[in-house]
Length: 244
Image 1 (spheres, rainbow, N blue to C red):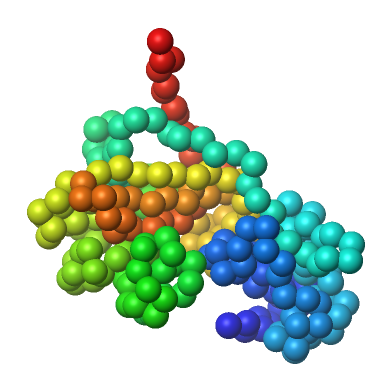
Image 2 (cartoon, rainbow, N blue to C red):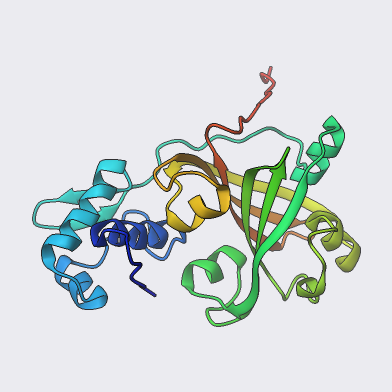
């Protein structure tokens, strides 16, 4: 839903609206976004304002305009695995002796839209659990994790206190299954208004976005994540072995 904010230029709000549609995968890769006239009707804004907002996302590299065809969501060009051992953030920080805090900033059960249903292997309209957690180290937010959890695979997961219990541990305890594997895709983005607020960074600040699908040892996907990390507060270390 588009909500106007006082003191924020309308074209900036259009850009943030469109950016969130892309980040949430409601506007799919290589698919055309709504036309200028459709956006004008949807947002009740002038053509010039819509054009300026969309142009900002073209400049960011999120959209591409093709003459005579429309405007399309750009497909990321880099896919890079982070290694062969799957650790949660909590497990990784504990192994390194780093203290951190977790704050749940949003949680709700809701019907799955098409992108979420596809990611979790459920039907559109099936209910899932949305959980947004903010991880901080030394008082600074370093990671925002938006988890979409398959309630068919992990029933009751919405009752857990995730400010005090790690997700992976809760899943393994409640299901009796081990975490199997994680598939990840990385891309660089800008934070946007909402995520910038949570991460305490400028809405135009660069962030690393990790899209992740986590599977139980029975082969079923139980979690689809969108993870956001401010570029100036984190780095990813990767070790790989050459196959002989």
